[in-house]
Image 1 (cartoon, helix red, strand yellow):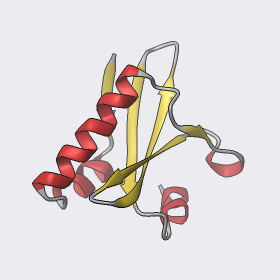
Image 2: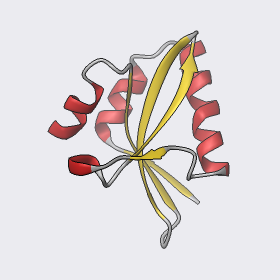
Image 3: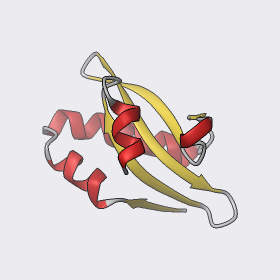
Image 4: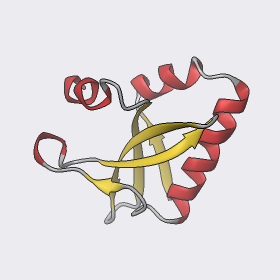
Length: 91
């Protein structure tokens, strides 16, 4: 299984501290084990899934797309709920 990240996602990860990156790594490993953990979105964002997890006692959303035919997880964005979906639509 391939796990790819967009340049935007890479920029967001650079800003995280070490303990935050560890929580993110655990979330990505969970997605690799079961790519259907996230909730499929509807409407404008129907191409992506969102997985919610806790990062330092704060709920964090991880947006990704999953193509079953190619077995690729493409990481699109990470952040808190505030303006998360609005920013993804700009992507």
